Image (cartoon, rainbow, N blue to C red; front, side, top):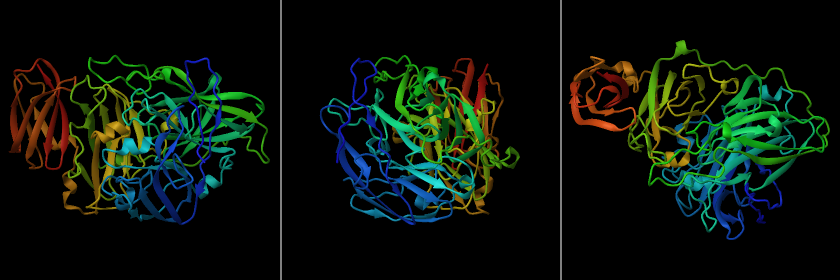
Length: 565
């Protein structure tokens, strides 16, 4: 049965009925079936919104999959939406053929049959479409669901785990509807807030320690989660697993695709009401959802009424305790040991770029390149440990997601990440002019046919081409010494330079293309089809200052800085 729901206006004195959030049904076991279908539901007064969902019981979203580490999953994914789609198991460590990226398309009326073993730590993951160019359209319409993985280490802890009672899944989405109440995939004036698919949401929580599993399922908005009155809570886990110990805090910032598990102690609060909020006024300008940035003339509107203000997300009514309540917070959780930097075989440098510094709505690129299904950006041998240095040269923050692996955040502009970010991650938000280093290891799966993805998880940026792909190759792969993104593979001299500098490879590779960008991200010089190991570049006509040099070879995209005197 369809549920009629009503939007909560932040700027109206009208009182709307509260809607109790639905708790998604669960699927367990070895054999999992998901059928993606079209549907509709009432979100705002007036016309029904056309939605997508999984399985007939759902008009929006899909069932929560509850799985155990090391179990086998045989999935059947059927497409009944009238268009091509895919299904990506976000955060799961599976072979490329089972990952559900844009190369693994499911035609309308067809089914896909991935089979894999659960290898991830206990945490909350999720599934959603990943069809190139239509990820935003399909996911924002509701095509997504949660995956909860359990393991023996998590089971040994005294934690709330009564699903829907003291262990609550929360899928928070912010989106924009048009005048006919239909979803806008690139809606940057998003002000319709849904929690588990309903507006103006509320839920009853018992007066004890409660576990909230938070997913930011929005297309673009970052939330700065907290509670009314700055009530403190404990972060116990993020994207890929539990932390070493609970982290006491009053805020947890989650960008699109990020997850967090938090404990809030409601003991003694029976009869009280608090709100889960977003303290968006504390976000930096450039972070989607933070203070609105001044827009260049002719730009599309991006001034959502939610930008840069603190607002309520979910009303929480505290009721009586359950039987056998959890009333304590564990002192420790599970051992988490990041990969030592000394084990890294190489560093890749990925710069987030745009056509100019004034671009606010895209397209955006990695190292100046837009996604190409036929181009493999990186190849690495099985077992290799790598550090990826991410630099955002645009004016917009980007949540960076890597398929296949969970990584650790090493530092932000040279500083250690906050304690709640020092665990297994698969999405990290990189702010404008910020450098973030992450470390990861590629284990277990190789494939030279179907690649893995890395991309911005602002869905419209991904659809517009802010995505790359990599292949994990067998050990002993012949290309192991020709690593992409390693700045040591290219030499630039003299530096500083007055007029002509030389760029040269040190591994006998031919340079195909050289581009020069100024500090605003504008391409000021480009030379194509060079086909040489060494080339001189005359920049005497350029103004004095600092520039970014990008050299593209058959394997590498290498970025260097140079100073023009």
